[in-house]
Length: 302
Image 1 (cartoon, one colour):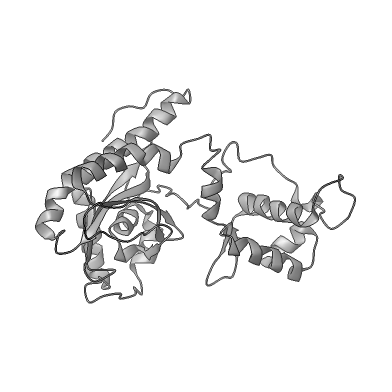
Image 2 (spheres, helix red, strand yellow):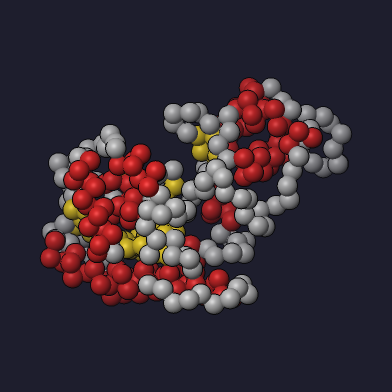
């Protein structure tokens, strides 16, 4: 299991990382010109510009409106309107502090139908279904995006009192069981930046102190799972374990959630072996996909 040693989480790629193979041909952005009308018949300029923006952000990551406008060869007001439209559909997202843009999580839903490499939801499905069958609780699959835990799939409990849908919900890392998993897997520099806070308090049980949160993450690393009890929402508890890629990097987290009166501390401890087993099953899907791609078999690691 890779913890605090430079692993790259789902939805996060270091600035120095190379562009993934198959991400498309390299583009000379200085030569891109979408401002003229000398286009093939039937093409729509606004659509071409929108696609060019997505390609530009895929190649460059966080970029400002001026950067995008320069790449398109248009005024920044035009670039802003295009970015604003794409953001409204979840295809790009804007950084709260810098105002810059990058590709949004909404693209995952589009890519899901045509993905060639490992797909998180598809590869994790057996583990999620197995866990749902063995617990009869709500099972969620989450990834880390922009230092938040984002739910991308869910199996709702059949119990009388069930957790509501969390699909698409973004939760700060310190307040979610899955978030603690992601915190534990961050490179040291990012971990120290996030752990320093400040941390929003959602309930009286939210862990906001740096020392206490650090101890919580240390415990998570030691146990191989993380728990929350009324830390994001009163009356809600959860337990999560990491899903690993073939190289032992944390790519997602699988969680059990439900009402605290049913998932008390004792019950969460009982569920720990089950959620870890489900995570192992989900992780096996990524190993299989990697082997099926023609790469030499990985050495057994746990």
